[in-house]
Each structure stands twice: as C-alpha cells, then as structure tokens.
Image (cartoon, rainbow, N blue to C red; front, side):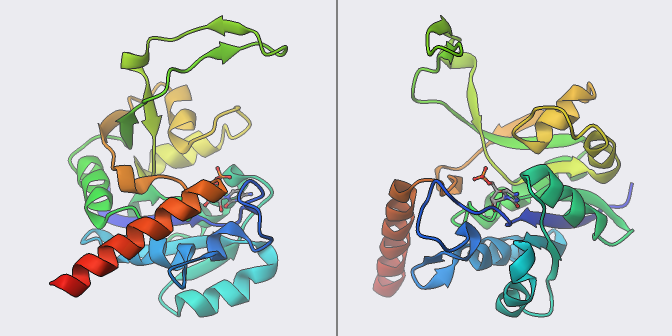
Length: 229
Ligand code: C5P
C-alpha cells in the first residue's frame, strides 16, 4: 500500500437546516468561510499531501478562488455519497490512504486529522473518531412510537475525518446504494473492521443555527486567548 495520504472534502451540501441561503460550506465563521478553515486544518496535518474538494456545481470556480491553486475542486453531486465518489476519483493515483472530512466541521483540530491518518498508516484499514453520546437515543417507528431504547454506554457519535485504505474505500463505494449516513458504514457492509479512536468536542458538525453560535463563540474565545499570549 502507498503511504501517501490524500483528503477529500464533501462541501456541496445546501445547508437547508442552517438556513440563510448561502451554501453551508461558504458560510463565514469569524469572517472566513467554513470550508477554508476545514481545508487549512487538513493541510496543517503533517500527513496530508493532497486535498480534493467537492463544491456546489455552480460554485466550482468561486470555491477554487477561495481555496487557491494548491487545492483541486470538483463539482459535487446530489447526495453526499455522490460528492465523495467524484472527489475520490480526482485523487492522484499514488494516494494509498484517504481521509474523508466534512467541510461542515470547521473547528476540527489538526491533531485529530493526524491521529486518524496515523492509525490507518499503522495498519488499521478503516478508522473513525467517536465520542460517547450524552442524550439517550430511541429507535421509533413510522408513527413516532418508541420501538427500542439501545443501551447508551455502547453508543458513540461519529465524526470526521474518517480514514481508510484507499482500495477498501473504492470497493465500498461500489456499493453506494446502501442506506448509510457515513463512509465507514459502507466499509462495515463489506465486513471490514472499523477502528474507533477518541474524537474531539471541537469537531462537531455545524448543522443548525445554534451550532453557528457555538462555533463563533469558540473562535472568539480562542482569538481572545491568542491576544493574551
Ligand atoms: O448534510 P450534512 O450536514 O450531513 O453534510 C455533511 C457534509 O457533506 C457537508 O460538508 C456537506 O457540504 C457535504 N455534502 C455534499 N454533497 C451533498 C450533500 C452534502 O458534499 N449533496
């Protein structure tokens, strides 16, 4: 396996749950687009040597200008899996390890990117960062009635970046019609073991308006601390 690490960033979502009209990835946080922050974090990792971004199809040129010449930008698809697949195809042939990272997780620390990449390079075929869940989770039926209450202590919330051996992710994406909500779900369906590592509270996904408020507050706090140094 080649040990060269590349990253793909699905950033083509409309961000309807966030509101505001602008595609989510281009929404500013403390004046800079979320996507730019996510890409800079990937490039700050000692491991990542190539980044491919899947942008909203009408904004490929705009996103290319924001990110600069070092980042490849491709048109995303109708669903996240389509965007990831198109970006995967654009990676250099000699990339052997792939990180898939949501543009919508702009405060992810570079140390988490490094930890995921290092775990794949150490021999784990698929690696995901996870956190314990704090709410109790219920499974419900179509009428909203509770069917089951899984034990909370064995549940984990899953973040990105998720890291994979490239050959395995490529095979997994051949099964893309499976109803999964993350890349590791496709890999699990192949029977490949998926390893968990500790995630980061800062790697939360900006989905709803309240997440934007939290992200702005965390950035303001870290800027204030930098100013005090
Ligand atoms: O919608 P959700 O928050 O789960 O999106 C996760 C990531 O997938 C976001 O970064 C979003 O831009 C991306 N996405 C995409 N193409 C789509 C839908 C979502 O690249 N068609």
